[in-house]
Structure formats: C-alpha cells, structure tokens
Image 1 (tube, rainbow, N blue to C red):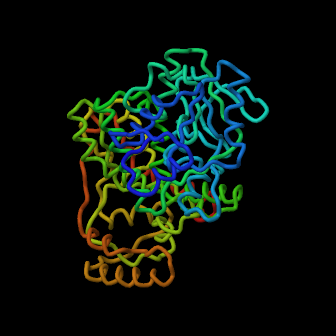
Image 2 (image 1 turned 45 degrees about the vertical axis):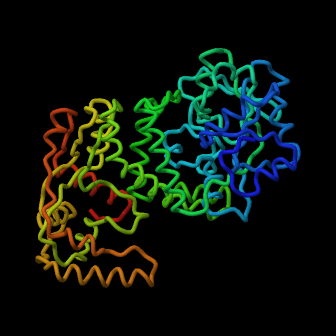
Image 3 (image 1 turned 60 degrees about the horizontal axis):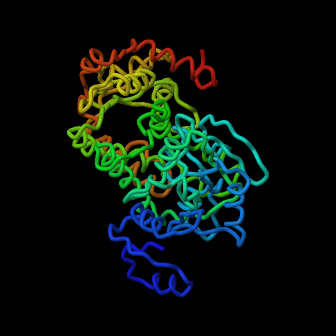
Amino acid sequence: MADGGSSDSTLALAREYGANVVTNDLRTGEAGKAVAFRAAKGDLVCFLDSDNVLIGPDWLTHVVAPFYADSEIVGAEPLRFIAEKKDTIIDRYCAAIGANDPLCLFIGNYDKYSILTGQWTSLSLPIDDHDGYFTFPLSADILPTIGANGTVYRRKALENIVGDYFMDIDIPYAIRAKNSQAKFAKIKIGIRHLFCSSASAFARKQKRRVRDFLSASAGHGVREYPWRSVSRMGVVKFSLATLLVVPLLAQAFGGFIRGRDWAVFFHPIACWITLAVYGSAVEEAVDAARYGVRVVIVNPGVLYGPRSMRHTFGHTMLELAGGKIPGHPAGGISLTDVNDAAAGILSALERGRSGERYLLTGHNISYEDSFHIQAKASGTTYVGRPLPTSLLRAAAFAFELTSRYTQREPRLTQDNAKIAPLKMWYDATKAQNELGYHIRPLEATMQRMVEAYRRVGALQE
C-alpha cells in the first residue's frame, strides 16, 4: 500500500492486516501507484484506489482468470460500476452512466457499461466473447479510457514503462507500443467507486481534469492518451445538448427506464457543471497557449432554430403567434442560427488559429424587429409596445419569487432584465474570413422554425 501522508488510522489498519506499506513522497495517486508497483513482487499486479470497493469474495478470482486462459492478455478490469442504495446520488449517477465525466458519453470513449446508452463504450472495437469476460486488441486507433478502478496487469507488460507516475489511461498505449499483439479483457463483474459526495466536490474534480489536461498538453509530463483525436462532433453535441437541456432529460429518462434509479436525473446538472467548469477554463487555456498548447475559443450568439416542444421556454415565435408577448425591451441581440454555430465550432477546431477567439454570431437586430419578423413568419402581426427597464425588473422579481414556490423556471430573471436594454451586437467578420463561417439569411432560419412547429402541430398553416 502506498502512503501519501495519511494522518488517520489507515496505516495501523493496513499493517494489522499484513499490508506492506511504502512511502509515496510525491503524495499523488499517480505517483503512489508507481511506488507500489516497484515494491510489488507478483506476476500479476492489481491497482486499486482508496475509493474502490470490491464486490464479493471471488472478485479477484474472476479478474485474474483470463490471464491463465490467454497469454496475450496483458490487462483486465471490471465491466461496470456497482452502486448501493446507501451511496450518494452522485456516486449512483456515475455508476449508472459508467463514467465520472458525462462528456465521455458524447465523445464515446467511456469504458464502463452505461444505462444511458446501453453500451460499455461507443467506440468501434472487435470483440471476442468468452464465458465471464470478453477481449479486444489494444491496436485500435482510439481506446476507451481503460486502466483505472481495479485494473490488473501482467508485470512483464509494465516493465520499462512505469516511471515516477502511473497515468492510468496512458498505460495501454505504452503497452501496445511494445507489443502489437496485446489484448485487454473486460470482466463481466462490477466494482464500487466512491467518487464524490456533493455537487461542489464534483465541480472540484472537473476542475482538476482541466488542470491535468492543460499541464500535460503544455509538456509538463508526457501523456499517451490522444485526447486531441477524440470525436470533435461529440464535443459539439455535448455543448448543444447541455444548452438545450431536453436531450439530457431524454437520456436520463431512458436511463431511469433501464435502471430505475432517480439518481440518473442528476445528469443535466452534471453536464451543466461540466460545461461551466470547462468553459470557465478559458483564461487557463489562453495561458496554456503561450506554452504551445493549441487553444481556440469560440463565442456563439443567441441561438435560434427548431426546438423540442418538451422544453417549456424558448418558444418566442409561438408566444408571438398567440399574442402572449405584450412588449419588447429597448435592446437587441445577435440572432444566430444554431446550425451555423455548430458548423462554425467544427470549422474552428479544424482551421482556427491557436490563442485566437472567434465570434460565431449572426444578425444584429433589435428585439422589436426580431419580434416583428418572427410574428410575420408565423402568420400574424406583432403590435407590442416598448417596455421600460423598471417594469422588466419588477416583472423579473415577481417571476423569481413565484418560482420559489412553484419550483419552476422563472420566465424572466433579474439578470435578463438588466441586460435587456443593451444592444448586444457583434461582428463575425474574423470568423467569416478565417474559418469560412457562414451566416444564413434570417428568413431561412425563420422558415426552418415554422416548418418544425407545423410538423408537431404547434403552429397552424
């Protein structure tokens, strides 16, 4: 057992049960695994974190069995996370989705069974199924994030690979560089992972991911996992799904049907926390760009386009068609088609210059003109009047107060009311010139929205 400075009774308990305790001077989990590996003597080495709990007395027997059946198997790990009812909501949520970072569900490189997708990974891998386990070759271009939480390796496979740090998901790439025939086994059992107990702890762990990624990308330690090669469209889908919320609720509902655990409805919150943390890393990313990390920043405008009817808000066109909007603020927005923004993000990933920011905005238009155009597209006429800022703020206060009792999203917040008088107009010329960013005609966006609403019967011909 590697000790990174424990101050409780851990060391006494470990020695009581006969553990060989070694000192981890660097005091990180990755360094502790490297220290413990050098002290271990067996042909098979099992790596367990302090937050792992083994399931059943035969757990280790199941995990090591494939090594005796196939000499080409170099590593093995459990197929799924297991949670108990007494575990925290976040621990149960992470066990249900098969990952600790919901972004992995969208880019597809998760490595534990997810009840949200019904798969253990979305990557295409050749599988050889056996009784109690299955194997796949480590020769695939992109591998799932295997190697953590109860992984067992052959000692010979790790020789001359492990340095001062044992970076879990990098190890399989280092192994395959030495052995092109290497296989990895997924054992059809589970392991508990006590990830964190609160939303604030979840956010802190996501921040650590950002720091680790930027540090490694800047050359502060050699990393093997090809994060820059993962699905870029997956990143875009994650961002859009999080902003729209409805796709996340649909995923959570599907997961609930499969697993019957209400913890899956933490999914939208987890995604929002993740997007907020990763998005707030802009300053850190810009700083990292000075050290050679490729960083491209994009800022979309106010997104418009077909929207699911499952979401209560955001249907301004329908409210205008129904005469439910009595007036307009003095300000304006940069109205942007959601498809244009998505294409711009992909283009920025491919063509954007590192360290640069691109505004993926659209038509700079006043709220009044926007309402007139949307009403006309829906077949009606907007007759609203200008609304003074003081009235907007009073209305926002009333909506927020009411939402405390109804537990529903307020139709207008005080923050929205404060910025409503501002003309939030931006120039996308830089993105157009460097990324080939395209802004479609406003009429085309309105037509797409009208057709979408008519298809579901929300808007009449």
